[in-house]
Length: 80
Image (cartoon, rainbow, N blue to C red; front, side):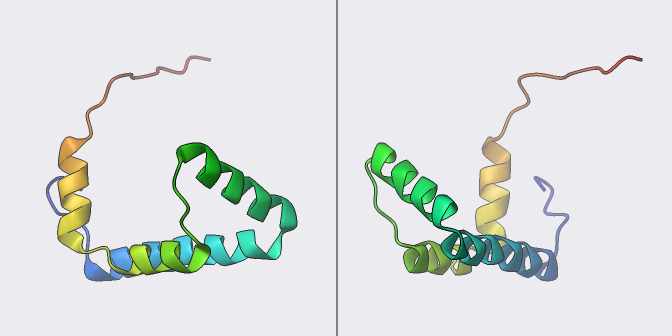
């Protein structure tokens, strides 16, 4: 992702997946309560509609900029 090896279609599919999750959370009372508790604990209140709008505003360059800031800090090796 740091090299920009993803397409606009990849980004749009990711957005659709995330928005689908938002809609699912609204359909389940426990998930909706958990969402709003997290919002309260973080000191921010973003409604589901605002969250969806923010997702839709994300551009390819935004993803690349965030990817540039991510650093690996742990690598796990699985053994049999």
